[in-house]
Image (cartoon, rainbow over all chains, first blue to last red):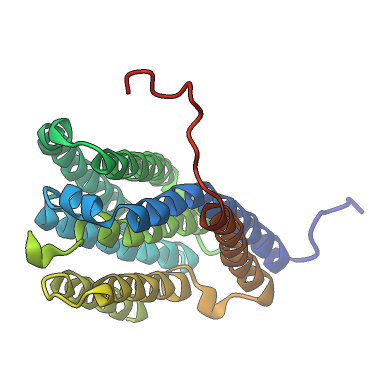
Length: 196
Length: 95
């Protein structure tokens, strides 16, 4: 009898999911120092952080948050579709398109903010450093996610009731990137909006 | 259906957090924003990332991430809270 690494399919599936969760934990720790830097910077320079955040385009940021959360819904539907052996290409395509729309809006924001950044001084520059580092790192993760979803789309015919681990773990990654944005949005867009 | 309800809750929370930032509440603005963000992250983790139906193994793995993040935040903060930053004399030659 050949040796097999897992006793059952259930065990194999949980191993794949556990590996992804372990990776996501390291990802959270990877983002961690930037979050810490933000907390420290904001406590040390509250006024500069508020004035630096006011030129942010809050409408575009809110729209982007909505797009990303909707993409999480379509991704969750793709994962469930794969588990139930249904067609998932439409959900995957919608997920990737919503991700691309997010990146397009983010790029246009960067473009419009460049003149504000040129005028910034002192601790405002700390704010912009954190803003570009954190949203940039997030955008990089989203770009990778879109690539993964495109790969899933291409190989969609392979997945079904019996085999869908790649769709499941990609879904976990996609939702994690969404969670990161959920925290970035109020940190950079919603500082004392009533004074803006 | 659960997914659509989760999405709806996320959208309502987004509207809440955005609207709250237009009312002056002092430190409560930040607390409200972070509280709502945590609620949204929990919704995503529990329903979209299936922690609701996950076994103990996956739940512990997810929780470990939070614990380690908290430990490292705490350790870093003790440094910043108890030490003075004294720039070396050779820094910033322009000044």
